[in-house]
Length: 338
Ligand code: MRU
Image (cartoon, rainbow, N blue to C red; front, side, top):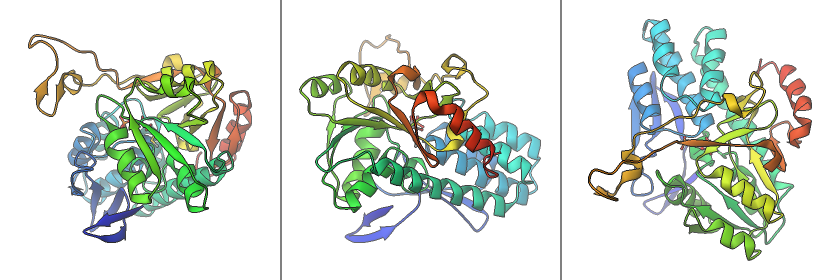
């Protein structure tokens, strides 16, 4: 992704491997500053994923892959490293896909690098397929951050918008702020700004208003885990946006690589939903919302039933929920995904 640092445009990745260390753009600091977090062992990787130094399903997978290569080089107890890293967050399937991939490839550095390159290249392809769904002057709704920061580069939901913009289409993006962690307001808005793509941040509860007034032409979101029937988990609040889109006849697309599909689950009921600390909801900029003794519930994701999805945008093409069997067969034939 292109980033403006002190007036200079530079290309950076969200995650990379250097000198036997895993380097991450610290996503907790954006947009205020660009800082690098360095992970030197599996405990640092666990900390970074759990505390959302790095977040977004594909980026979590790549971080785990590099983390395991680093742990192996450092002669860590690999059973323990795998256990530690896999317990960092439960919902994003990419984490478990990456761990399986690294186990099958003996935790080698070259396998981790290949995993990162594949995921990056696959998100570019998602961008190309997704671009075919975007017309000039389209106004697009997105939720959370499914951009370059959430992958390594390009993004999933944001990749089609990047490519549409680069190819000269004029687009406008409605960015849900995405309480409680504000990935939309902080990360997606920052990425779009770096790219020169026109956008407005909207309050999480404003999308229905804009849909009803015919201000939104389509929605594209990412996913954390997609079951065999197309039910999918994504950032909390996605479900209600999908229902509103259907009621308002607005196409609702889910952009995700093969590594996010969990075909072992028949439907979304089996997707584990992470419950995060209540203080993420209760505290804003160090001030407390609500009464001192008040409590909050904080599920990080919700599951959207497949009937609200127009189609999935993947590196293999675009598939309606009823066509996922075709996608399953393509993934089975893909050596990297097996
Ligand atoms: O809690 P987060 O920030 O990791 O949640 C991220 C999302 O919900 C994204 O939409 C999803 O991981 C897709 S990222 C390409």
